[in-house]
Length: 407
Image 1 (cartoon, one colour):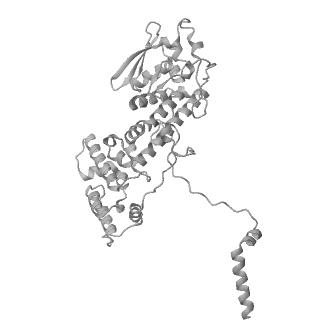
Image 2 (cartoon, helix red, strand yellow; image 1 turned 60 degrees about the vertical axis):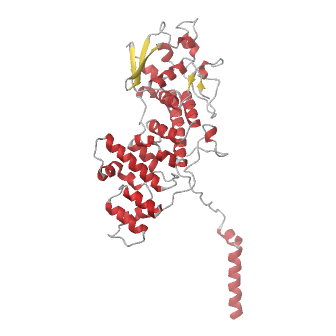
Image 3 (cartoon, helix red, strand yellow; image 1 turned 180 degrees about the horizontal axis):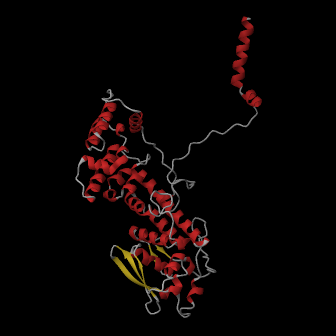
């Protein structure tokens, strides 16, 4: 579904509660009854007709980032009732409010949703920026719809974009904001809305990481990888469950990213500068899984220090190390020779038919490894366990018979 409508706008919604439940089975809280709050504006006008209505507007928004902005008329009484974020914004007596932290398309789709206009989520770009706007203005239902729509379109390229944007929204991803604006937490309803928004973002990021695992070659060779920040890159290349056809692909991806990073920071394209931009990420490829020719190509990228390259070659060719190998180096060499796990990191969260891959899906930690099945403890009395062990009884009986025979 590419068009979303606000369930509060449908007939039968009372006291701010929608008659429509989310597809996950959780009733989503809606913050107000539109008709009750819009009577004071014009009883003869439906709220749908207030969108882009300059005549009855009493506030103006200038929304957008990086100079790409739009001017949108609004109505204080309507928008102040939609979310605590709007309520906090509209406490000012200013006639113009600058919203310079949300893409103009996302802000426009958010207003369309609140004014009961159809909200279009046709493209990946629109769904992404609308998700950002819905999260920052604590709109759980629209956040859910955006997450489900993006999950439908997930592939290696889309997953890279999503992780780049969601890292600052997802509570369980590195780099997430520690808390929303303080006015957003002044009520329990706002806290619940924030929790729901974070849940949908976490679920989408979880599935995006699994898609990158499954399509690692496509993700690592995509040009969008070079535009990622260090934190975004680390989130991907540190994963043990990347299903790369060759570790050389991962090494070449790191080399391309380090070159692009040096160019962005106006640094010389020397091996030392490239290694310093990568830091510990240079150790992510498992060099000792490579065949001889591929290993030579990977080491020629000079992601490792000269002595480290020498140690890798010596271990690969089963030669004695030119220098004493410490515990840290030995651990690294063993890790580079360890095959990657063949099973997925976790089950996907069911957001759309695309992520419905197994019969029973249980949301788990954000792409944490599946825990090993623990052995069941035995609570039988010791005497009963000994009696039930027939092999042990036979063995002891045989020994007793031999003793009697040779006595």
